[in-house]
Length: 227
Image (cartoon, rainbow, N blue to C red; front, side, top):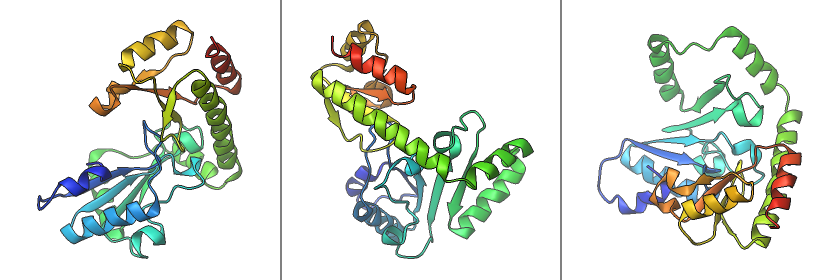
């Protein structure tokens, strides 16, 4: 369940609220006041809040659900889910972790023992090395911020509107037309993007533009957008 759906739930019973900030695909960053409202709402109903924070390190302004401004100093009922594939280029390693409410984490550990989800020792060693070095994470954030600025300017100059897209790995762009038409036109210009309707009907007029190519390829895409 997305956080923007909570207001419409009324008295229904809810077991889990799932957050994603910075978001995929929109790049939206939820402010701490919004996150706090979600946490308070969930706690009033006995629901768990699980926050997908795999893009958190790629933003200066994003807050974890475990931040005191959000959780009020208590991790009760909260889980923060992290992946190192984005922050440390460990895609394919399936390297990640979950933290938060000790009781909930203990329950997850008990399930893990019986589900065969043991992380291989070489992957654990890679995670340990990555977690002990913040320099490369800061470098990643700077690279994506640089690419976001360059490609956003190029798309806007070409007539596209960029919604949200404050952080993460993507730009959420629209030409206010069916997304497949936008995909086709950009492909003809040599720029490949994902149709927004992959992510649900709300994306029917948007495309997701990735920032994961090299600086040289981002520059080439920006040049192609000039027509």
